[in-house]
Image (cartoon, rainbow, N blue to C red; front, side, top):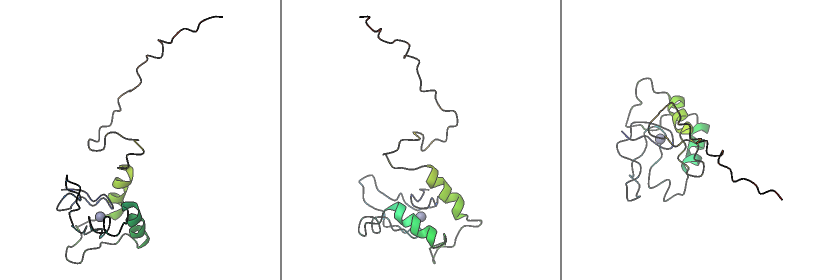
Length: 119
Ligand SMILES: [Zn+2]
């Protein structure tokens, strides 16, 4: 099941955004964000909403859907926080696969320096 990009709730019915880019109009039962409405229509960013939600005390939003047993907003929130999807900061390339061993991206080609010309 898709995860809410705002609060990290992993039980959304649909992906928040269709491949075409439209919102799902689903309301996250956890944080209450409605995709395609709160973002597109109201112009509230995920970060903004998350901040508000935190201020309100991380409460389960839905009245129709009960919170899962042992629901822990802090745990799920920590997961979104550690996986930012902002392309501006490519800290982690592995967003989906939680691979532990990082590839040593350093290929020691710096040894092939162009020799300086002596004057
Ligand atoms: Zn949410």
